[in-house]
Length: 206
Image (cartoon, rainbow, N blue to C red; front, side):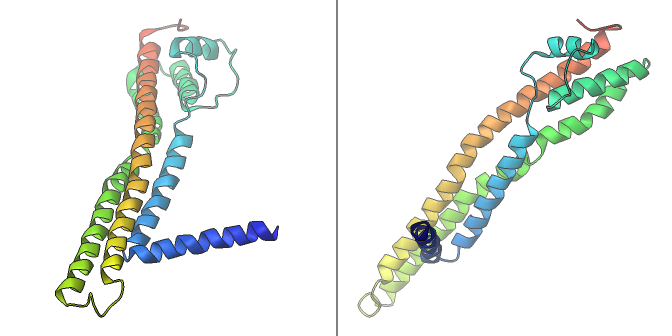
């Protein structure tokens, strides 16, 4: 038990030392990392499709009352669409568009946040690099190389730490973002297909 506590304390202390060594750009990068993974987690949960069956099969099941409680965005959209169709015959497409706007907003949630954080994190790392290089050249220009131990080393460390963390934040974010964007695109296609099928079939869809 004590070993686990010591290991945790050592990890926290090492992380704090790493952040301090990187200079003033490190705290914003840490905040960016927190925002990014919160947004990714929330977006991942929102982009749950539900059943893996295709839209036509799901429409047939739900319209026949043979499906279970909807547990994903596509399933929920089908149930909502069938409810609208059973109560609205005129201007069905307009009512479906209005109702499905909530689902379409849901699949786009946090996408902009992720895009912005992924874009600015390497730039913040680059800012830290520039700051570190300025510190290094200031040490040389002021002849403090001989009077201040570690002037150049500290400047280079600042540059390397911030660049490293900026890439650590951005690269996994880009990969996960591409996965989520593909999932969003597929769900949007499914939602569009649901509306098309509901409008084009005057009776029970097949």
